[in-house]
Length: 217
Figure 1 (cartoon, rainbow, N blue to C red):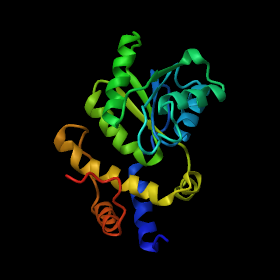
Figure 2: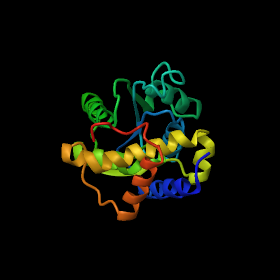
Figure 3: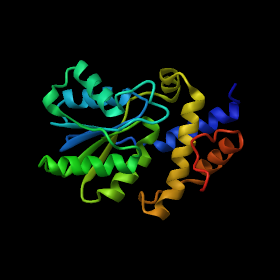
Figure 4: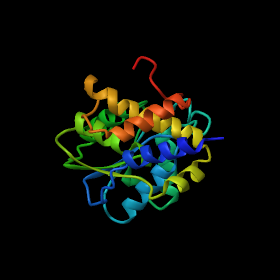
C-alpha cells in the first residue's frame, strides 16, 4: 500500500520529469530502450504522422527487461513498430546500449556510419525520463536540436498501463537522483530543480523508494 503523501510526491516528480515539448518534424527519431513498449508505439505514431523519415531504436537488455524482451529492447521495439505499420526500411536498430548515455552515443555513431545527416532529434522516452534524456542528449550531442516526446498519458493512466506503481516511483526517484548528480560527472547538462521537487524526492527516499538509486551518490 502506497501512502497518500508518497502518491502526491510521486505525482510532483512525474510533472517535473516531463518537458511538454510540441512534437515537430526532425531529422530522425531515437527511441530509448526500456521495459515500456509505449516508446515504440509513440515512435511509430510520430513516424506515421510524417514527422521523421527514420527511427533508431536503441537498447540491449537489463534486469528489468531480460525476461520480457529476451532479444533485446531495440529488437522488440522494432518488431512492435513494424506491427504498427512502419516499414522495415525506416528502422535502424542499435542493440548494445545499456544506459542513457550509451543510447545517445551509440545512436549517434550508427547514424554517422550510415551517412544520415542529423540537425534535429525527436527523442522518445518513457514520460518520466523526458528531462533526463533531454539533458543527456544536450551534453553528448550538443550540435543538434532536441525535441522530447513520450506517450500522452496522465500519471494515473501510466501507473495503470505499467501495472507496477512501486517500480515506476522507484524509477522516477532514480531519474531525479541522476539529474542532481550527473552534471558534475559531465553525463548531462545541469537542470534547475525546484525546492519542492527536491523535498518530494527526499520524502520518497525516506519512504523506501530506493531500488533504482546509485549507492555511491
